[in-house]
Structure formats: C-alpha cells, structure tokens
Length: 284
Image 1: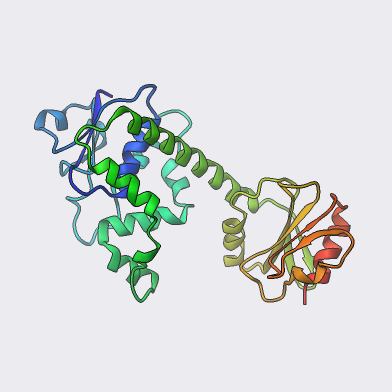
Image 2: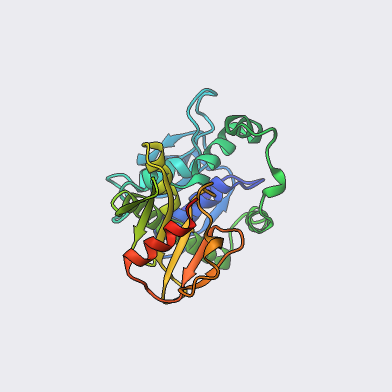
C-alpha cells in the first residue's frame, strides 16, 4: 500500500474506521489523504481508496458504496473493506472478519445509519426518533480532529492504527465468545436454565444466550468464575422476572449481592452444586 485516500469534508464513522482497519493491517503508517482521488489513483491497486471515487473494485483497492442503488442492502466503506480483509485475498488471521463483525450490534447500525440515514435507522429499529442525544462526545471529537486534516498527521495515524487493531481483536474475541456460549453446560433449576461458565472470560455470553433463547431455551442466569475475586459471579440475564439475587445478601457464603438483584458474588469458589443451590434460592 502506497497510501490511503478518503473523502474530505464531514467525516463519518465508516470512513474513519475503514482507515483504522487499513492502518492496523500495515507494518508501517502510510499517509492518509482526505480529498477526491485521481483517475490514476483509482486504477492503481497500491492506492487504497475508501468511501469516495464511486467504485467498488476490491482488485484495484477501491471501496465506495455511494454509487449503489437506493434500494440496495445497507453497505458502507467499512463493510465493503472488512469483507475484503476477511476474504481469501485478505491478511492472514482475518478470515471471515465481516461475518464476525455481524455479531456486533453497532456494526449493522453503522451500515444503516451511513447508507440510509438516521431517520431510516430509527424507523427500522421502531424508535420514535433517532437518539441524537446518545451520540458520544468522544467519537464526535475524534472525528472532528480527523476531518480537519487534509493530510492526517503521524500521531493521529498511530492512534487510528491502535483503534483498528483493538476493534478487530475485540471483534474476533467476541464472536468466539458467542459461539462458545452454545457449548457451555446448562443446569435446569426450577424450570429455567442456568449457564455454567467455569472461566473468568464472559465475553459474548449475553449475545450467545440471546441466540439460545431465540431457539427456544429459557436461560435466566449464568454463573462464572469472578474476574475480580476468588469466588463465583452470579448474573441475571435481561432482568429475567424470576431471578432476584438480592435475596442472597445475608447468606454467609455471599460476598456481595446487588440491591437491584442482577448480580451477586461468593466469597470463595464453591462447588458447582453449592453455587447452583444459591441460584435456586434466588429463583421465584
């Protein structure tokens, strides 16, 4: 890669993140220019053109979605480029990256937001309006720093590379966690199911549980090795109406039980039978 070209003017999350992904897969920090590409650059496969240029030609390094028809499925620069990175010609270790990104709730939202607009996204989600008040000032600030530059400075390219690597690594780990959830043992307690995660890694368990619920399982809670202590963490999924861990607050084996009832922790790593007995006490 000689350098990267993306559009000038207002920056959006898709062009910014696409640049981040590109920078994170290089062993150096190639220049990033924010302007229209030339015809020569569009024809040069060693120049990466993202979110501008009116072409989607992965073999030439061009990844724009603006030329797609109005009724096309939601796409953005990030989705087009991540599909390439995760394909057979992409970097080693990133196979299936786009499908792994699909596990992330923000990814589909980003595609719809960028390609169809905030009001179309609100309609698709069944919201009365788009929640502009939830937009992060951190994200807004970083994008404004990015969009102010015609040639992105070295310090910002290094930060973008780190953001890209972090997002890719977290995506791969998260997808693995969701898949792992379906293989975890489950205990039936008073007619509902409890996931048993004999690990401190709870990545993707909520989303993995939601997939199992969609298949007909009533999974109300999980028990995991506590990542901040020596015992178990007992966690209620989606505020399940039958589970209230606050009732365990006076049990001598319990270190902490949240007043809201969604989590409790034991002092020590009890036997599995004993921790399931505690869960049973919290089920109505």
